[in-house]
Length: 217
Image (cartoon, rainbow, N blue to C red; front, top):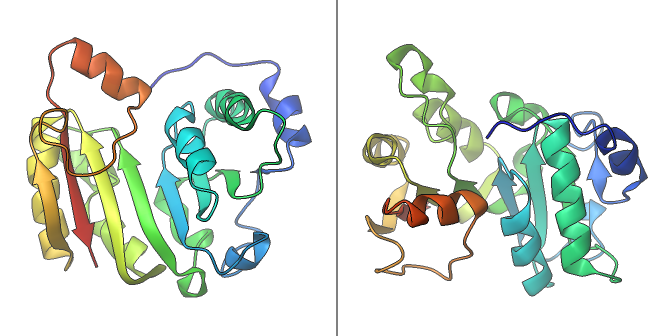
């Protein structure tokens, strides 16, 4: 998603206690101890966009710790505001918003972090052959995730793109993930408690069916 620069984003992000600008410095393998309840499950969203999905999810599940990842400052600024709106006057104690590049995710997470679930929602489909390795579901990326995922962890994946979904099914299989559930029409065949993202609403209004799956390591 393209977004215009937000002049206020840098200042507001610096002031947010739940925001981390350089997570690759000193955070790898220590994420669990950063939360008030380090024994809680740890879930992350890669490519959080405007943060509506993760802020709604984290507020509704105080017994789960969350990390939301994006790399665009303006997008992170909007996410920060949406998180604060969800929590209102409550402390944001079970969610960190971080700035990181998914292609260098192993600089941020390590095997001691034992992530229990990854959410990938409406990622860039990178349709050109030479760019497909940049997909967040590409086998190269899945192999990276495996290095910090806990045993029996899961990846929840949603997309509007038919080709990306079909090819991702093969990526998951080749990377050793077990397909737990899948659907080619999430809104008529619900396979998990769904929180609609901003992209999802837009695509659904255009009549595009949402594809989704759960894959277990």
